[in-house]
Length: 341
Ligand SMILES: O=C(O)CCC(=O)C(=O)O
Image 1: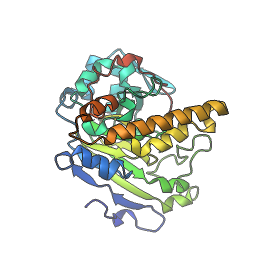
Image 2: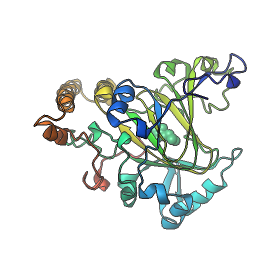
Image 3: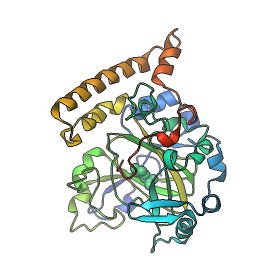
Image 4: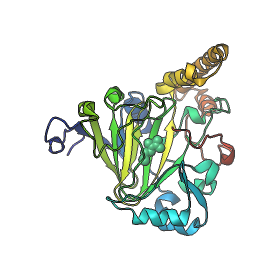
C-alpha cells in the first residue's frame, strides 16, 4: 500500500482509529537540504530508507555480538531492573508475542558504552543533532551525539509507553538489526490519547494494540501513522508527535534527538517554563539568552553558501556531521539517565 493511503482493512467499524501508511523516501533521492526543508522544517514525519551508511554497526551488531562481547556487563534494562547483557540477550531471544521479554530503551551509549561509538561512523547524516552539537550551545545543554541511545528488544517487546519527546525535540530512530513496527500520532491527537496528569508527554493507554474502548473512547478519533522499520531505515519523528514501537523480531536500533530552528521556540519555552522550578528572574534571563542564541544560530545557518564566510559560519554553528571523536570525551556528556526524553 502506498504512503498516505488509509488501510480500511484495519478499520472494520468506526470505533477504530484511522490508519495511514507513513511516507517513505530512499536516501539516494532525498538530499539532506531537501530533508530539512520538506520534513524537519514542516514537522512532517517520514521513513528514510538506507539512511544508515555502511558502518561497522550495520555489519556486526547482532544479538550474538552483544551477548559475546558484553556478556558480564550489567545494564539497566528498565528503571527497576538490572541484568547482565548475557541474561538480557537470552531473554530477548526467548521473547514471544504472547510472552514478551524485556525492551531496553534508555541506555545512553556515550556515557555507558563509548566503545560502541566508532561502530556508528560514518554517521547517519539525517540523524545529525544540529544545534545540540553546536559549539555555541552552552555546555549544560550541548549534546553532540543527540542523546544517542541503544534500543534492544525481542518479538513482542515494546517501548513501554506511547509518548512524545521532552524539550520539544525531534527524534530519529535508525533500525540496525531486525524489524520493528513503528506508530505515530500527530500532536493534535494528544486530546484523544489520555495524557498522564503528572507527565503530559506520556499516554495512559497501556497498549495501543489492545485499547479498551469503554475506558478510552476518544482513541477512536486518532489517526495512526504506521510503518515497519527494516535494517537501514530511519524514521523521523517530528517534535510533539506521539510515538511507540514494537519489535517484530529481535531488534537493535539507535535513537537520537535533533534540535534546530524548526523546534527551537518550543525548546526555549519548555526550558524556561514555570515547571523548570527556576526563580522568575532566572527564567527571564535564560529565555533572553536562548532567544538571542537562537537568532545568532539562525543567521549562521542561513549564511549564503559559497560566500567567503560560509565555511567559517558552518564551522562555528557546526552545521555538518562531526565524528564522535571530534565532539569530545563522550563519557562526560551530561545526562540524567532516566529522564524521559
Ligand atoms: O524505537 C523505539 O522503541 C522508540 C524510541 C523512542 O521513542 C525514544 O527513545 O524516545
